[in-house]
Image 1 (spheres, rainbow, N blue to C red):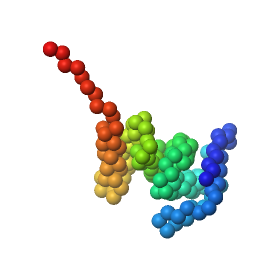
Image 2 (cartoon, rainbow, N blue to C red):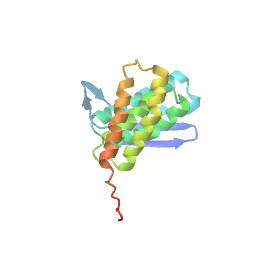
Image 3 (cartoon, rainbow, N blue to C red):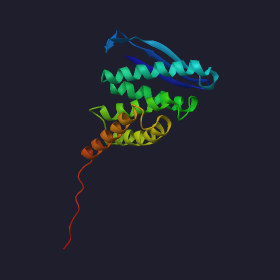
Image 4 (cartoon, one colour):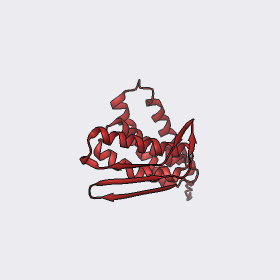
Length: 165
């Protein structure tokens, strides 16, 4: 799979080309070309483009291709935050899924775990404020935050203190 992303003055150009077909949950992910032109694109088109990019990266996560998913999210999430806004449901879902890609990767670093925790700590309150406690996804994001926290506690080296008498 080849993922190329380059920043341009007119926006972000994302070229996704894949060879073969990857099967995930009875759905197929095929290569496609996605172009984001920041504020120059009509809002509806931009949202559809972010949905496509998010679905693609989420499929990569389901395939346990975490490095590719993280690279995709690292390029698209900042643009989504700028174009759609911090409180947009898609922006929040993209950030949540990015955090999950960070902490579910078996080769993740402690820095990535901390980034996942920080991301979830910033997404969870906004999600709860916008959608409320009764929303079916709210407990899931809280559980993701708890999982990230527990992984950090497991991964951190035990600190030993010298006791002086």
